[in-house]
Structure formats: C-alpha cells, structure tokens
Image (cartoon, rainbow, N blue to C red):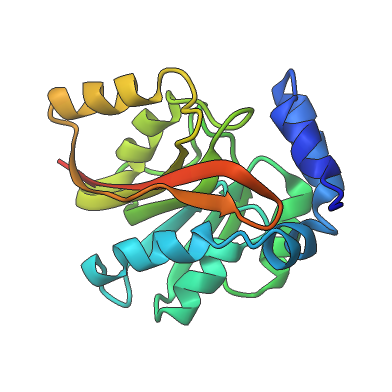
Length: 207
C-alpha cells in the first residue's frame, strides 16, 4: 500500500498555517511520491492546453508552483520566461534549485499578490484549486496580474468540486472579466495513488 502522509495532512488541514507546514515537511519527498509513484501529470496537461496560444517569450506566472513541475513542463515546451509563487518556502526552495524561474517569491492565493497589474501574459496553475488549498477568491487577483487578452489556465477538482468555484467563475464571465476558451474532460489526478480524485482543465482569456 502506498503511504500518502502529505496528501492526508493537506486535505484535512484546518488552517493556512497547517497547509504551509505540511508542504514544507513534504517538500523533500513530494516529487518522488506524487509524480513518480502516484503518476501526477496535471502540470504537463496545463502547459499543453495553453502552449499554442503563447509566444516563446511570453511572461508566465506559475501560481502555486510547489516544487516547480509546471515550470519544468513549460521550459520543455519552449517557454523561457517563468516566475514562481507559492505559500511554502520549502517547496519554493525546490523550485528555485531547478534554475528555470526568473523570479521566485512567497505568495498566498486568495490574498493580495505582490505583482504589478497587467504583469503577465498567462498564469498557469496545476493541482492548486482542490480541497484544502486556494479559494475561489484567488481568481480576482490572478485576473489583475494578467494583461488584457492574456490567459489563465488551471485545474479544478472535478470529482468533488470545492464550494464556490463554479459560481465565481460564472460571475467573472457574466461581468465581462474573462471568457471561457476551453473546458477539458475530467481525468485522474493521481491514477496510481488516489484514482478517485479527478481534475478538469479550464482555460480563460482575460478581457
């Protein structure tokens, strides 16, 4: 049986500090457990979903970067200017060590972000909008930091969609903040570890 202490702690966390501490502790073994053992590939799917819409020199923000898997996939796809933001210092140290990010800084999705308005051509986020993680209120700040015409591409837990997300996504669309480009089919997030968890990729254009 596969041990999954990191996932258990995070999904049942009662506060932001608990989430941060769990990821800090998990940082050393995260890649081996989640990617190698569990088969997590959402970061590759997010990059593949947005790649055709981006120039090679597009400025990207990896929001909730964790150890930097989205950045690795983006670099492999020929994207060259990528910044990382996460709440966990431990995970950011792993991301920074990869040498693929232009800028690495601590930030919390759902709170004001330390980036200028219209800074990025796209925000990418994989495995972040799921139980115990970032709230739907995070979308407002992500929209703010993306240029008009830019993109926001993210996974959203689909087997049990966290409360408030669909309503917030529809609210932003109805008020002309963003428009839906594509909604992907559900897929298993971690087929070798927790096959019951499904994600769906959403791609929006900021208006």
